[in-house]
Image (cartoon, rainbow, N blue to C red; front, side, top):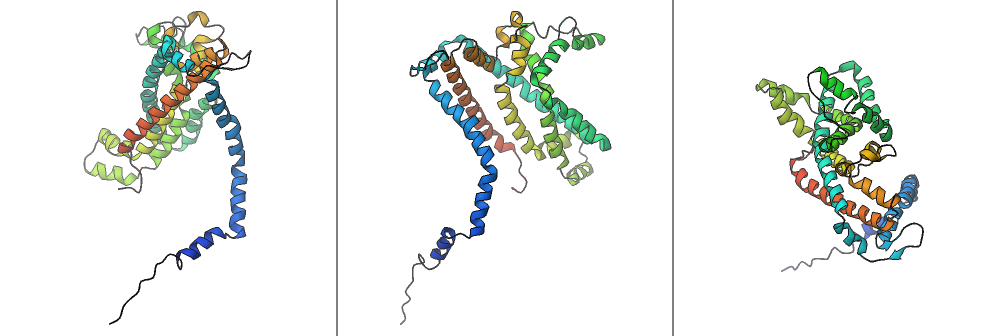
Length: 322
C-alpha cells in the first residue's frame, strides 16, 4: 500500500513570482521613473492649486477670518451659522432650481444639435468648429452679450418673438424669469457636450438601424430603442458633469445681476450659491464662513454624484457587457 504525501505549494511556485516582483529589471524601473516624470507637472499642480487650497479652506472653515487679522478658532460656529442664515438656504434653492432647468434642457438641446450635425455631411467639420467656438468665449463676455439680447424692452430675443405674435417676458427683471434666463444663457456653453454626443452617435452600429427598419420601426422608436440606449454612457457622463457645473455656476449670474452696473436690478431670485459664497468671501470678508459654505457645497455635490452613479448605472449600456 502506497501513501501519497501532499506538499504545500507555499515556497516552490510562489517564491519565484515574488522574487520577480521584488527584483525588477532596470528597464522597468526606468519606465516607472519616466512615467512619474511625465505626470509630475499634474501632480505638482494638483498639490499646489487643488489639494493645498482645499486643506487650507477646511482649516479656515473652523475659524473667524476676516483677512485683516489672524484667524481665530471658533469650532463649528460657521457650520451652525450656515443653517441659521436664510440667504444660504435661498441661494441653495435657487441653484437647485437652476440645475433642474439647465441639465435636462441642455441635454436635449445638445443631443438635437449633435443629431443635426451627424446629417450635415462634408460640411460637418465647419459646423463642429462653429458649435464649439462658444465654449472658448469668456463666460463674462457671453453673459454681457445675453444681457443685451434678453433686455425686456429693446432685446433682440423679444423682438424676434414679437414677429410671431409672442409678447416676450422681462427676462432680466421679472423675478419669475431670472432663473430661466440663466438656464438659457448657459446653453451657450454646450459645445463640448455636442461634440461628445456626436462622437457617441457616430459609434452606433448602422446594422441596428437597418434591422429596425426591416422590422418596421419608425424614427421615434429607433431614437428611444437604439440611439438613446447605445449612447447612454455619453449621456450619463455629461449629465454628471453638467450637474456639477450647474451647482457651481457663478460667472453668468454675477455678470448679469451682481456686477457693478447691475446691483440695482439684483433680486433674491437670482442669488445662486456661488455668488453668495463670493459675497461672503470678498465683499463681507467673512472668509471662514465662506470656507464653510464651500465645504457644504462639496458635500452636496458628492451626495448628488453618488446618487446619480447608483441610479444611472442601472440604465447605462457598456460595450462588451451582457
